[in-house]
Image 1 (cartoon, rainbow, N blue to C red):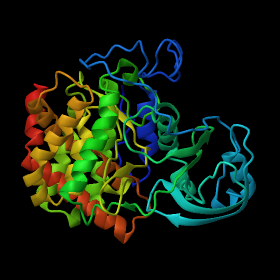
Image 2 (cartoon, rainbow, N blue to C red):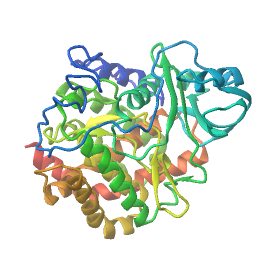
Image 3 (cartoon, rainbow, N blue to C red):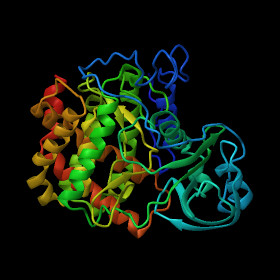
Length: 433
């Protein structure tokens, strides 16, 4: 594939449509033609006739009756918070012939997302026969037209996860009442359970080892459910599909350009050693993406503290923001969370044990033929996921804030140190020979 990248430098946000074009132009299905949909005879993703390429013990793949998601495509999608009216919410929540009448709805912004706008909705009812809650979380596209015009692929990814994978994904997520998209994905809405008093994690502050254990167990449930399922290998609704040489080259070109932007605009805040690590990691990204192709699953893709809600006593978590779903080496999610979420010195002491927690959870959910040392090697490779998302995230953020700059500094420095600590670049070269 010819490179789509120009020779002249690009400013942040200018490269993203080109990266999307490269990925979307690679060969992947756009429908499920020829495969039965989930829940119908004949299989589909996780269906009775799937044949895992990697040995997985037989296990119950029956969908959980947790989420009832509207998946119709319609133009009746609120574009702004003002469009979330009592009438719209009444129609949205009134399913299966049940009349729901919302009297009032009030929205307050929550979260710090760069690609979407999230609100807590407080509602009152005139009729509520199903005893629906009085608060919801509602996610709309970014209210910045420039951002919104570039991230339709992310909205399609989240809609694809909730409409086709969420029911059977063994990962804790909020209950979803409604998810809809239209056009090329630029119109999007998600209505889900409000899990307050659960709180969002914070990368800058870091987390406890106990919180990382919960995350390792949770993400193992997602990976085990779709472990090396051939239907998942071609699942179309992801931001980055399973790497082919063309996909690897396209993403590699994008990372090279994003890294150039990050080093030019942010490099003064990093050490020379970290700048060299970022540069070298970008050059090895195409080779890294194509390693261990025999092991794959659905990845959250952006599995970090900001996208996890924690119970105040850390007794449970819930994973949110499925706008970066990917097909690839499963341990990339684990590495991303551990490296971004733990203080580096804590990470060095705890990471072997946390890989063990993740590995035991995989085995408990049916994965076979995957030994602990291979899992550790995959973890070492997986730390590149943080570098991937951090560089793309920095180049994408058109109007950085002090908060986002502090977070990016945290992600860059922790990523670079982990890459060096774990000798990840040396491992990539060794395995690429």
